[in-house]
Image (cartoon, rainbow, N blue to C red; front, side, top):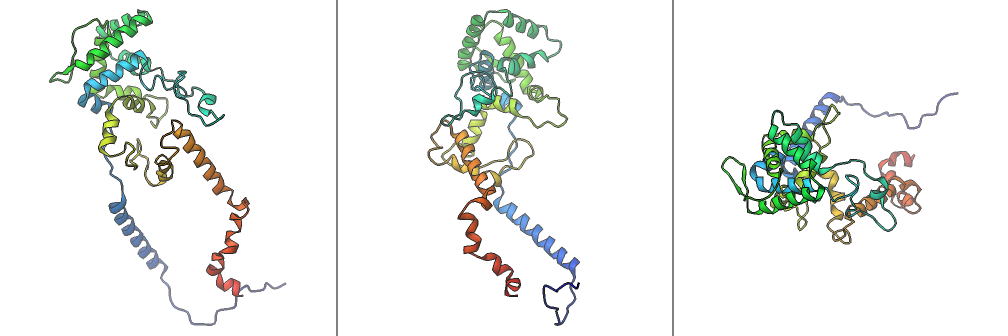
Length: 310
């Protein structure tokens, strides 16, 4: 049984065609276009903020944040799931409460993670070990009184030429020794290294250092300089070597309009919207009306016009 030809045999003239030349021209044109668009449309690739930078430039704010982590009054300590069991401000929409349902999947005890454990990593410092032991042996009420008193004193603290803090005298227990040691550890970069320890070969989890910096004023002040506090929206590179511009625009767009803009549940509401839009895109072949659009606007017939003429 002979096979019927789907198209008529070409009887016109033939011309030589250089496939390698076309490949080189196309590659050169695409490279040039990519470079031009990168120069014109790329976002600024600023250096990342670090805990060492923060503690050096804003030592008082760093110490104030560390004290809040110690006594459990920071934003992270009171956030709730997935970091701790605090009631916090749980994201929800009607009866949907996934933050509560999923529970604590990334446990962070701020006092241990940001103060006690990093200080315990400092070798050969009896005064720090003694301060930790004294603080842990004290009742919870006494610990809170020491931390609150030191936190208030930091409002009047001054910065010494060597980057340390000069705090007015008061009854702070072992907290000043702990905070001075933690500040020194942070300024040398040791604290960030301590927070990034994990069992993974490649380090991709920046949760702990990011939450610590977010509890302070460093990221807020940087966002204000970049006009990223909300009155003007935009996108910057993500933490680490990941792209963070074009594919995020649809997510960040929703935060600029109501009801998301003023909602305390904006994160979860945006996730719901994007879930619905993603499902709608996946299910286009099954949605009546939308799946019939190609019949109303037969673009495919224009593209394959020779086939349909035959």
